[in-house]
Length: 276
Ligand code: NAP
Image (tube, rainbow, N blue to C red):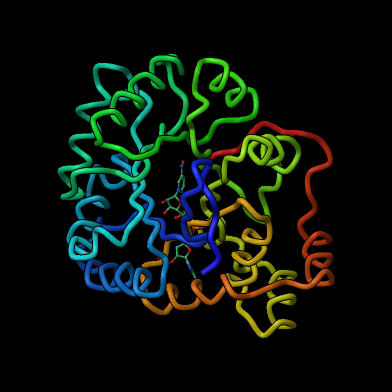
């Protein structure tokens, strides 16, 4: 499996597993559990979740599905902005740890920016790191100016920005991706298949047919084409997980990339970071 390197040199798989909307429906639980386990067996050991997902239900599902292989995982969770204060981050983190049935998170993210100052959140994250409850911290949905502000506020230890980035959301290529690359911070691309909406696109399907792959695989391979970008698709079935895993081995040619550029051009002007 291709890897991405964190600022401290630690390597994580370039393809992980998202969990938004998982753990919420009893009739899907067995399939979701099997999907997460299959993904880990195939090397997709980076698992992304959040206290928000199903009000903790996704974290509980992860514990149930993957508790036995905890030490193989790189577990990522996220805190609500209203919990990102000195006072509240400890209890939000403790609650996530309890639901995940673990003693540490590998990465803890601020889910999006709220009214708590970035400086206070940095302090709260660093305090969690000192006591060993988290190994790294980062942010999500922060645009370039927010990242500048974060670093100026003492947040140089941030390891990633998790953002909406896929074929139909190329705005970050203007300045956010170059900024993150310059600061050696990998990008975690969320909704890499645009929650399934990309998959009906005829131009994407055309490229997929020409490389004997599926639309999902081409969309994922496109996201992974840049060094320093990792993708976290959510898949609720073993079949989708297997299909996605194979995308990490798919290398698109310059012609394929040109065809995709034609169908999904980068926006001409800079635009604010989008989020879902
Ligand atoms: P996504 O991964 O782009 O799309 C998920 C959808 O695509 C599901 O409906 C899934 O169906 C389908 N899918 C996956 N693989 C497929 C395949 N090979 N063939 C056909 N359909 C496939 O969207 P997402 O869940 O929004 O994003 C991924 C993860 O990023 C989330 O789960 C979450 O962990 C994270 N995220 C973070 C933020 C943030 O603000 N930081 C926001 C959004 C998402 P099945 O379930 O049926 O497989």
